[in-house]
Image 1 (cartoon, each protein chain N blue to C red):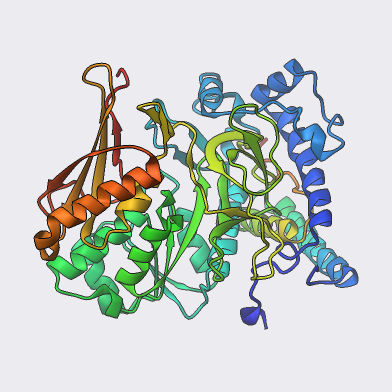
Image 2 (spheres, rainbow over the protein chains, first blue to last red; image 1 turned 60 degrees about the vertical axis):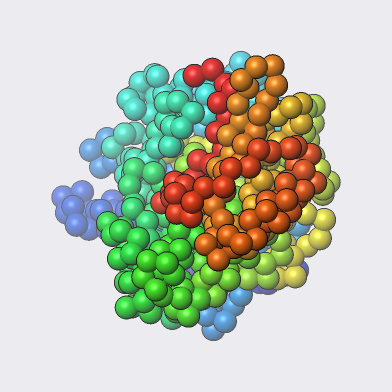
Length: 67
Length: 444
């Protein structure tokens, strides 16, 4: 039996999505600020793990800022 | 409180099996599309098979997807961009980690991992360590020379992630490592089964320390099948006075399986992160029932820079009949990885797996941990020689031990052996993976 119920899972997924949105926004604004840019990308890698742990599909990593 | 949860991921690890299969299908479709769209190698492979994203509608359809193997990966890496070739699905600028396979069967496979992939490695290892009882109260000693191979890097980072204190025992010799474990009162460690035995031997016979009286209470082994071979497992557990847990993983695949504290006699497949299929050794048909051995075909769902889809690992496995009492719904493979398809060889017309010899030898308390098997064909028939070391205290019982050993080998492997007894301490001691089986019949 699943250890967690659906509404609880949905709530967790929404919170993780908000984290992703925040980290992506941060990375998007940090092109001239390497420390923020790289840390936001690391944060996004952790967000990806939480998404995976919640049974969500992977999302492609952000493209390089100079690409 | 999260610390009391027996599962790293209570959502995935206890998921209803039917729902888990649905999730696996959805995830397979996603990684299939990713590889098709981003990798010239996979696109060519799938186009040649007449497959495109959208064609995979059921788990049965997955079986239409062409398999890969080490030889194909090596071939793909002859292309640009160097050194990963057509397998790469992200720009080189997003590759954060390089690792390679050991290359024991020729040129190694190079493995590219992006930062999310590197996180994924340690996340997969968190499932392993949590299931084996690692908690923030543990001081984990890693007696391993971290290097270009993937071994134990992710174990290190996973132990950190779940809150343990990690002691990297890299550039130390064996005696120094043992002494550091004693000094720091480490509670857990990781290594190959061969090296765990080697360390216990050094502690006992060179340093005069009883490893069982030291502070280690759990050991995670990988790299060799020994931790799931009952006699080897027993030997290591008795030597260290600790629980020994197995894990199987590979550079090209990831950390796909783990034993839990219930020690059910097998490994859980991390089915939320991987799809494991078993193919019949002869016919190639899919094996879904327990108790039938076949070769593993595996897909990693979330590895992005250099994906792993339907990889024929040549590992021999079988599904277990019973679920694990730990409550995980992830299926078990009985007895861990039972051998490798390319290790099973015919000797005197009999199929022989080196793990069967290990199970017998390690069951003799009068023998040391080391042994070596040599197969030769001087004329028209195969000769198989087993080299062993008798412990000094067992010298008086030599003839009786050898007679029992011959009988046990014949019963368990259906073969007769020439047995050579070597002086204690004279056979090679290995630090990482042992190479105890030498087939000298094959042309070099």
